[in-house]
Image (cartoon, rainbow, N blue to C red; front, side, top):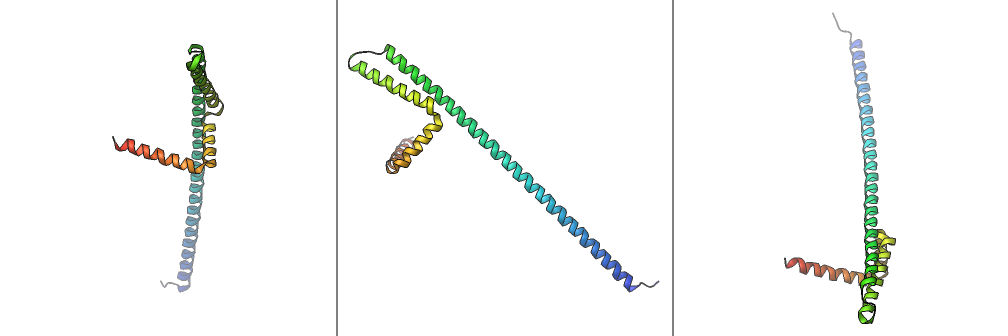
Length: 150
């Protein structure tokens, strides 16, 4: 039984073609899987970023609520100082000034909250960069001195 050289070549070509198609199919499936995995990773990252934004917003809201509560307490304390503090003389003047300052500070905390305070601080630093830098250096020096003694 002699092998026909033409049929062996044809079978070889068919086999090579089949292997080429299989390799092409594997490549396409790998690309599809990679694309699907990348899409899922992007969706997961987007979802996590959205959750992070939501948590940051909730934390900011809670900080603003806490600042508002502290502001209300300061205003209440101002009323107490006015009622129970001296009304005349130098002590009366000091008590009245302290009560006014507490009331203004309490109103500011209630209206602005932590978010508004951060914006005001940012604007203050932008308007006065050199003094802000000097204050920062001074605070850093004090913190370093206090922590080095421990």
